[in-house]
Image (cartoon, rainbow, N blue to C red; front, side, top):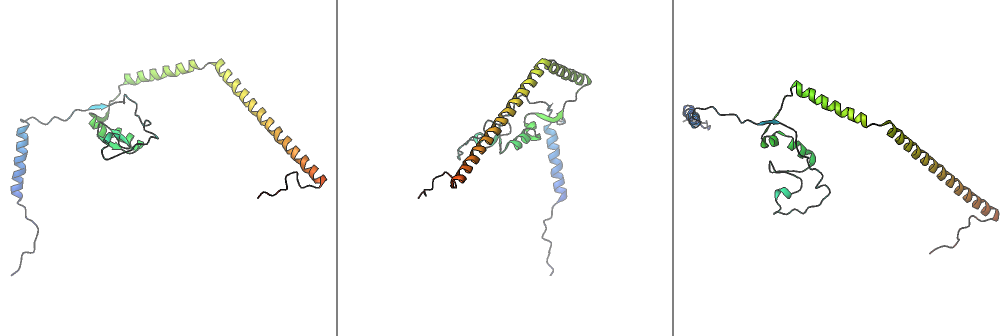
Length: 194
């Protein structure tokens, strides 16, 4: 009179193996014997637009149940149809794998050839030379003179301010001495205000 204490469900492994085999053969037949082509995605490239993070800064928006998701609080990504709450997470999202995949790009970067690198160096070198040409000695001397004049004017203003303070202190001291000679504690009013 022993009861079966094994409550686990028993699976027929042979039956499920046959079902899996059948499903695989059906999938192969649907593809007509051709292997599945992997999705070809573009290589990662620079953004050709500026990311707008400041347009909604400091603005107040009333959000109701009927407000569309694109106008909700935060940053809306129209490619992935999602709202991100802050700018850092929004930048992480648009640089992330999911967003790039939705744009049709892989996370791989095109390998640069030696010629491309040399051209890039030449372009950067020309930019540096242009900056050096723009640097004019006379213009720099003029800027230095202006800075010196500003510094002198600032020092003069400080000295004038110091003199004014010293003169004010002297007048107060003279008033105090005069009051002491005359026996007053000060020239102020002795009336009490109620």
